[in-house]
Amino acid sequence: MTQDAVLYCEVVQFYARQMSLMEEGRVAEYAATFTEDGVFEHSLGWRLEGRQQIIDGTLGGLEHYAGKAMRHWFNRYVVEQEPDGTVRTSCLAMVSVVDQDGQVTFEPTCTVSDVLVRENGALLTRSRFLQHDTADLTRVWEGRLADSGATASAGTEQ
Amino acid sequence: MTQDAVLYCEVVQFYARQMSLMEEGRVAEYAATFTEDGVFEHSLGWRLEGRQQIIDGTLGGLEHYAGKAMRHWFNRYVVEQEPDGTVRTSCLAMVSVVDQDGQVTFEPTCTVSDVLVRENGALLTRSRFLQHDTADLTRVWEGRLADSGATASAGTEQ
Amino acid sequence: MTQDAVLYCEVVQFYARQMSLMEEGRVAEYAATFTEDGVFEHSLGWRLEGRQQIIDGTLGGLEHYAGKAMRHWFNRYVVEQEPDGTVRTSCLAMVSVVDQDGQVTFEPTCTVSDVLVRENGALLTRSRFLQHDTADLTRVWEGRLADSGATASAGTEQ
Image (cartoon, rainbow over all chains, first blue to last red; front, side, top):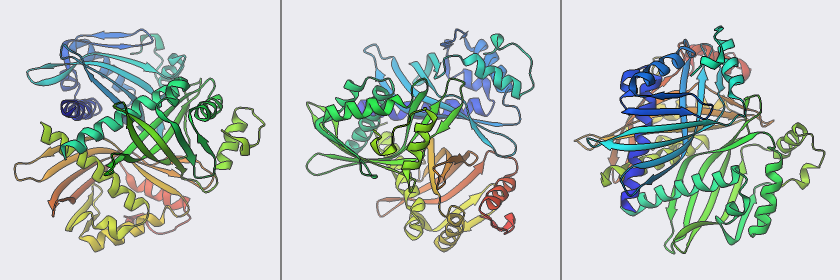
């Protein structure tokens, strides 16, 4: 039980740091919190594999927040260690966006399911599965694209 | 102190799982996270006692979210063990609702005060006291009822 | 590692209690969670030093929420102990406001960076640095002042 608590506290701080790197646009460092062959998948079907794709996909995603401050709120973590040492985690997540006038909006809530592994003592995300609480996320992406003045099809969105 | 940390990490994950069961509509499993004689009270005066009332009350509550995704955000837990082994917890809570268009709204914030007990090794909620940060919650319930097209009086609410 | 987890769980509960004291208007008790010479600074330039200034500044801030319920949501804590025993923490924070009609709004997200020290066994905040995710917070303060019908200059706002 003590070991479970130690792991829990390590995991939640891993996420605190990982998401700060992303929000601060430090995408190479963010990608380095995934394994070399790390996979980031969304229930809608898009999939990034390997750090370079994660970098490229993240840069594309960050463009939508240009001039705004985006933050990830993680909640209700569950952390479970497998017999082989891999760690399965899940949590609830929500992104807040603050625009230049200080107005706060929120993107639809989602769940995050990760597999973490330890390399050289540090936790890394080997896989992430993201599922938003909306039947049709394309409408959300489209809305966001419209907001940012982009005309690209939502289908190419990551 | 180590024991306190172990309990804290167990408790927060207990809530993560308990509220997922509710959000996923697994109400019998949700009710099973309360003791057989578990009590769920609201500062406004309603009270559920025993698993069957908790099941019925929860089913009634979930109807208001039909077609929407409701999530519970818990924050600022305080966990204290009594000499007799019971655990007193409190936290701040907020419910987010995502509609089919991906629009996010929030219900008034509240505080949750629980007494947890251990049965067969597992934590269970023996009592829960909920207090919303609004002087008159009936207006909120009524608003929600209006939204969902229901005409029932707020007084009969869950 | 066990010691890190023990400290993490103590710190997050320290904040849970500290912010409850503030929200409940118990400002002297809230100020007592800072050291005698505690400093509370904002990136915009205002600075409170010592418990009396923290009391006065907090009372001034609370006036803006008269008739409303304000809550602090803390997330993504990172807790690090220095060799000299001081504790550096950071977290993401957001304030929710519930008005008398139960409507929920949010203030811009911010980051909180604290230095905590231990006195007589208890953690206290020796310094706090707050930075909001907006380029120009005066517009936010002004907006809030406008909402509350106040006419004071934002420049005197804490």
